[in-house]
Amino acid sequence: MKWASLKDGVFSSALKDVPDIPEDMDLPEFMFNFRPAFRSDPSKAVWYIDPTTGKETTYADCLKRTNLLSKALHNEYGVGKNDVVLIFSPNSQEYATCCWATMQLGGIISAANPSYTPGELAYQISTVAKMYNIKAMITHPASLSTAQEAAKQAGLDSGLISLMEDPPQAASVTTINKLIKKHESGKDFTRYKFSSGEAKTKIAFLSFSSGTTGLPKAVMISHYNVMANVLQYNSFRQGRYTPGKSRCLAVLPFYHIYGLVVVLHSQLFANVTLIVLPKFEFSLFLSLIPKYKVDLFYIVPPMAVMLVKSPEAQKADLTSMRDIMIGAAPLSGEVLNAMKKRLPKAAIGQGYGMTETSTVVTSAPNSLENPNFPAGSIGVLLANCQMRIIDPEGKAQGVGKVGELLIKSPSVTLGYLNNKKATDDTFRDGWVHTGDEAYVDETQVAPAELEGELLSHQIFKMRASSE
Image (cartoon, rainbow, N blue to C red; front, side, top):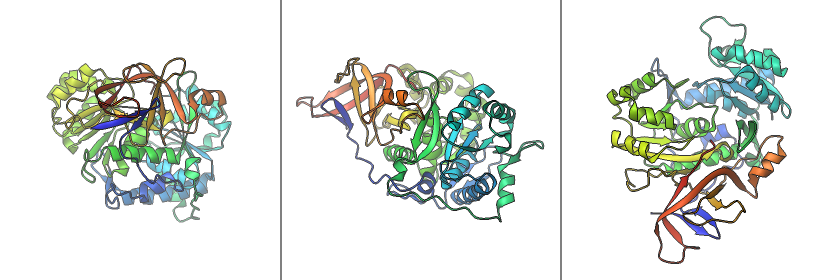
């Protein structure tokens, strides 16, 4: 199979471009109503299963809940165009609802790491507040004291804090359940409507990343960026999941771009049922696999090592595992091969992306159908993607030569909030300078001259990873 072409120092994906990425639609409209040819009808899909109770939440439930929360956020806090709602919480079935409810009002989500200290969260609050009005903060009962202290440090009114889930004991702050009930029969909200092309410039998320250097910076991610990557990734994965039947353990944190786009949005768009875990607990993780016949997994290298080396994992029933993607950091070929030996019926591979590319730009093809694909590779370019490898002087490098990886994709984000220097350093002429070293390993070069010819099995290998 021919994976990419090389011309004038630019590697371009040989996969068919994803057509018609919406430019006049927001992310919740896309999730609920956009129907490309490869998407099955979501109207009767089960989008979540509660891992404790087994309760199912459907597409229809999510749509109703999102609209009710939009009304509550608007009537209670006045959330509207370009207002920010900050989420400071571990994973929850309510996470996407909070995002989409805000976006239907024209608002922006900034999600924070739930393990932040008050000082770290205050830094995020202050950075965002320099440019936008933060109208609400939604947190988790376990994170409430940190949220309140951070709000105090950053000068944010603590009355803007609400809880994503009901606390085990009475709390001094309201919850989104109470807000919905309070405003359910109140004045309806006006849905923000995009003008032509606005999806490309309207910010959906302000996600924090260290980038290549320095303190964390707020990456401005447009609605178009997320929608593009969901379509790029799901078009690549056709045949590796069964809409309406496949299940995924959603354990990667939703505040992080990997969990936010690849797990939360891409899987729900594919009508894959999510079983959401607030944090990674290995014994629980293993027990839920046979209980719910989970077949899709998105993990990070330490989790992969545990699946291979842990005595507990050796005893566990992992027979339902069918497709496993490892990302966020490099994994050795040795560990990946050990995983393939432990799980011979599963397709296993690595991918690469970063916050600045709104996640995935390369991913490994199905390893069961491509058994000779190198284990240490981060995959092939997704549709609509291009890459360059350059030396320190900026000269393009060909096959087999190490250099800095540059990426161009419709998922490339808008830059860093209020940080022109960092934006100019990283985003240049449509290319993201990743700061990561990579090389292309061609195993079957077409017999004609390399320049301008298609290469078979162009494999992208990383020496480092930033996200």
